[in-house]
Image 1 (cartoon, rainbow, N blue to C red):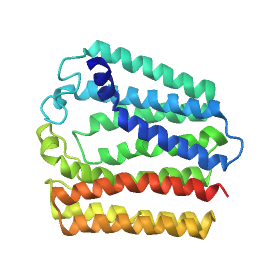
Image 2 (image 1 turned 120 degrees about the vertical axis):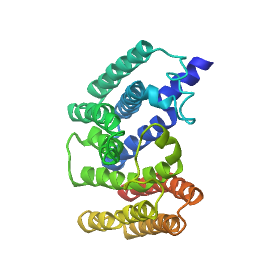
Image 3 (image 1 turned 180 degrees about the vertical axis):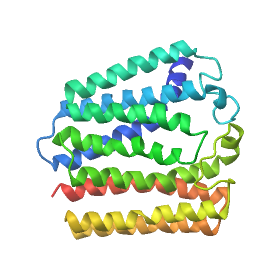
Length: 286
């Protein structure tokens, strides 16, 4: 049915699934194989799905006129006029309430606070900033990095070094991931007045270089993590090897700055993150 397809596009269903997966990964890392509560996982699933869906709906409310000028987004339900503004506002409100209730009733207060903060940052800071400055990508990386931390806190109820690491790791991963996407869709983004690559002037060697450098920042963060929170060296070496593979993909993009290599980098980033997250779970489940 078209209404179901449109709702899926409104909330960016596939992105929501990734968000839920990341939050569950954070929860499993915190649990360390002990005292896993199904109710808490359900809270994360529904809380993450609905708050993320609400954020995406609000984002599309703000950007409906700009979406209309881009080929990749003009068939979204708002610019295509298959949904009304008031209808989407209602969906966003209902999803916000349902997400908040899920966090509040099945998780804990800190999970609720951070979950709603993520929604607010994405919807009301990142979204309007996208047309004003490339710094929007930095702001947008904050809510994008919070899901595993939210999952971790859903189990522990507090923030510690591991929670901070989970945030920082996913925060840094987003730059090569998103800048490769911004490179691929640069022409489309330019139509709507977005300038999302790190330096201005679109597809330049400087932007390819900065994308590569951003991938290298993952190495010192991983080394710092290992020096403070010891995990099995076997798992750590697996993560480092995967990270070097990811760095090589980013370097190849820098040396061959075109859309084809940007697509390869984007795909490698999508493969890299869940693999590393799964290895982290294995490392903590001794």
